[in-house]
Figure 1 (cartoon, rainbow, N blue to C red):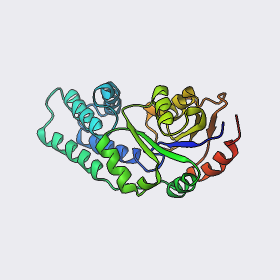
Figure 2 (tube, rainbow, N blue to C red):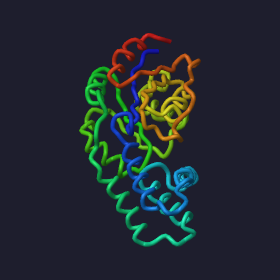
Figure 3 (cartoon, rainbow, N blue to C red):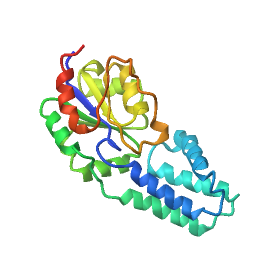
Amino acid sequence: MPITTIGFDADDTLWHNETFFRLTHQRFAQLLSDSDPDHLSERLEAAERRNLGHYGFGIKGFMLSMIETAIEVTEGRVEASVIAEILAAGREMLRHPVDLLPHARETVTSLAADHRVVLITKGDLLDQERKLAQSGLGDLFHGVEIVSDKTAAMYQVAFSRHGTGPQNAAMVGNSLKSDVLPALTAGAWGIHVPHDLTWSYERAEPPIDAPRFRAISDLGALPNLIAELKNTP
């Protein structure tokens, strides 16, 4: 079952993303330095996880979770100027230029010559479309899937729509939880490309016993790995 379709995650696989969340998190902590500073990070992360079902993944949900946390830790006494600063920080994130990770462009270009390459990313539709357009990679992809979450069923549908099913596909990404594990469950190859700043929600134990799991140090190693896997059952 040769690999004919390759799915790429976007954030922190093709371009930097978590870096900007961390910087905004630091700014948020400075704004609320007088309110429960020892537990602020934990309370914000709890709000983010709690709100995923309501707001989904992305910057806008992060902004709303920061506002909710600010209200909670100040017991409703947060100043309007602080809320304004949080909103300004979120808008700054939404305007931030796209910064490609090393080897992203050449790797996608190389693999697109002989495979169907598909961008499979989750998050806010408008923001992900903006980042793809600014990345300069849009014309290389044969298909784009912007989804609310990544599940085995989603990969089954995506790889069937853009190829001949997950058995002939590989998913590449920095998140073991979202990019690798559900892709493996769907029957595809799952290729992990670690990123130093992966959000804790996206972490999981590597499925080292899974026959179709592989890990590489960076995207530059991907073309050779795909060539090796082409005739691997």
